[in-house]
Amino acid sequence: MPLRTMTTALLVSSVLSLSGCGGQVGGQGQMSNGEPLSVLLDVSPASTGATITLDIASPDGWTCRSLLTNGEAGQPVPVRRTFPIRCSDGAQGTILVTWDKVQLRQHGAFKLDNGRSGSVLFDFSR
Image (cartoon, rainbow, N blue to C red; front, side, top):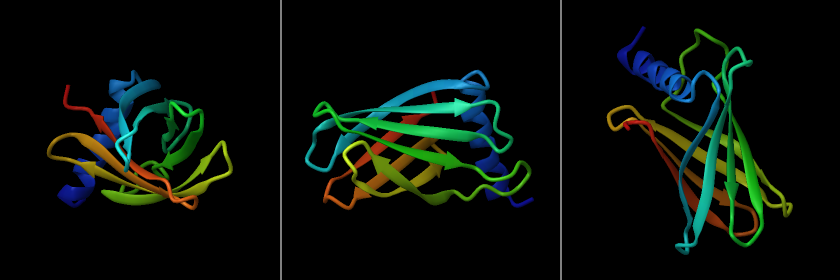
């Protein structure tokens, strides 16, 4: 197994173990205009390949959700993947998620069809 694949698989395992094999992990987020966002990863321990739900909430009242699925257990997990994201106000788009294996962080950049965009960050080094 290539080192990149093993390291990425370890990061996914870190998300699961840091959350106690299930649970929630908070992070940081902001819109491209600087508006803060509340962001949360919710790890489902019941899923074979681990399904991680990303929730984004704005102080303006809208929320967005994306399911970050890692695929089947034992399969390589890409360092960078794009997932669909849907919002409570009907907006939709994509989020590009990158696992930073050196700093143990997960970065996400999203863009919605209504023109909104922003970023999220989860730090697993602590």
